[in-house]
Image (cartoon, rainbow, N blue to C red):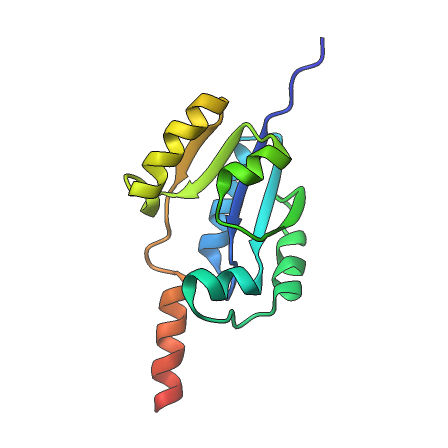
Length: 143
């Protein structure tokens, strides 16, 4: 009898790609057989972060496709994780632990339990983040 493959899913903007991104993708892949990564489109980032990514969407996709831990890259056009589940039927979704106990993810936890999807919170890299890199760059540009 053939063992069922565990499908994992995670998403991100992946702007200013850094070691925290690598760590999340590596850990996520270690916990599933196939890792699908949704890369946020420029339009989605503009909509919910009210800013344009520094690295264009097609280049961010190329970066993520080149990571050996990633099996498939798709566009993330919506923040609705249950909508992505309907299309992909993943078994586990990976998210940074900075979202743990947030109102949004408490609601998603209830929804995903009903669907049989496990949420795994992975350690957020506190020392390195795209936000921190942007802040440093902005200070540098002002000098």
